[in-house]
Length: 251
Image 1 (spheres, helix red, strand yellow):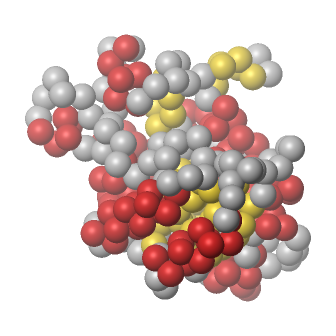
Image 2: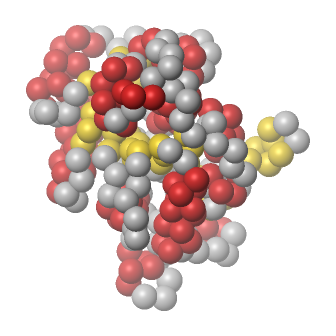
């Protein structure tokens, strides 16, 4: 990136573990500080008709949480109709996810915002290039490359279910191997009946080292930003975003 960005990159231990819900809650908290906050998801697969608009559900949620007015295309330059791996969804539509296009869109939104929250797609290593693309860089890049290009601190959403410890530690290892800072993690309850949660949280805390736990979110009937906010470590998030001087309201 030609200029430093102010915000975080949100990744997860898997797909469908609550990255968007946590991202939207954080964006809303930033907005309550009086900041121009934008939630971005540059690549999204799977659209539906919402309020008369064909849009990805995650893009819709991030736009609703943002205090900076952005179009769906500004939040997400690559929306695909099929709900599958993005490089496959791109293939089905005869399109290619261009690295420069993604970075330009993020930089443009960041130039207008005080803080950004950029949500990745799926887990940390999701293919974005197509094998038949011209040039190795176009064919081989993935969501970890996107995070590296942006250079933002990374927040890891850990979906609490069987296997989450292994997935979290491997993801953290991959993040750090890229030279990125794991600024914290949020435990989001995917399996409400998961046994031995306290033991799992202890193992996660030990395994993730100096990255603090920024929240433990239960399974909520309506996981809106306002419902999630009480379960997040708001002071720690303000420290990460360096927003202490802007705080006007703390849930």
